[in-house]
Length: 429
Image (cartoon, rainbow, N blue to C red):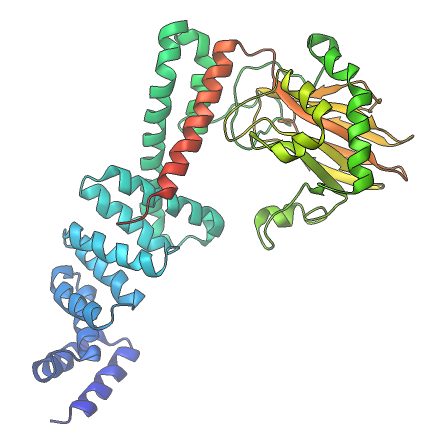
């Protein structure tokens, strides 16, 4: 028997997709050459096509030993093992797949499903969370049909886990203050986790991350409603003096918008992405204090630490000098959450500079007088003058929220942040 001729004939049948015709050739070939790669491939393909996943397993297992880095073999080994109920073997195959290709969406989904069947819900949630992140990058329309059902299951699994985590974090506040005291935040948690649709109270209210229902519909708030605003405004000259030194040194300012090339955000912000037309000097970024920047502006930092900033670990406060160059526009957009308000302390405002539109209202800046607004509404800003405009931006709590609601909202977002971080840090095993 000419083994080489038989392998060539078999490969030709496989290339034509004629798996059933290839199967008798594979049996004959494997009888004389048990480790023939074309023979093993034909055998498992024919078995899988018949839906006999258990019959495909030994051929795929041997092939994976011969081709330990072949992703197609490992993926099919995992799938055959999963479909035949060999969940431990499936888990191992998909873990090997993910070591070679950490971004494999099918590998992550089926690794999670295998772990779930084995009762390892922590590992399942981790793989499902990673799969969600990749699916978001791909976009729903690009998701293969074969993965839509499993991805829906994965998303629901993660949501249930997150709901349980948030509920546990909020329970002590319910016990202390009563359920009604934090009912709006409980509703926010249900919306955040996808178990309740948002019922926006205004057509231009669209926070990108978290929504607290039943807050007053207000775009701008008045300075007199915040007792501490006078302290901030009184420090205008000291703050401006430190700003001017930084600008003279041209140090510490960076483009405010900085998204990876080719990403959805980069496309949305194409005119400002990586542009110094809108630059910032941060004192706080995503809730983290930037000690070096604060040390260079001691008077500004001292004032900031005495204010009622919006503090949620990993998210807020956001505090910065915001520099808008001449003839520049910050396009219409929304912030990530409602329940907070944005404060502008205008420091350098050229004549005929422009202004700020929030929802349906528009106001201009006046040096030393704060503007307070809700950035969860669609808003834009512009500088039509020939000179640079600079404001100090910080965020504070919406006064409509009680202390109990503030704490509950902070716990909700902090729980979500740590939940996601812990899952994404876990490696597939």
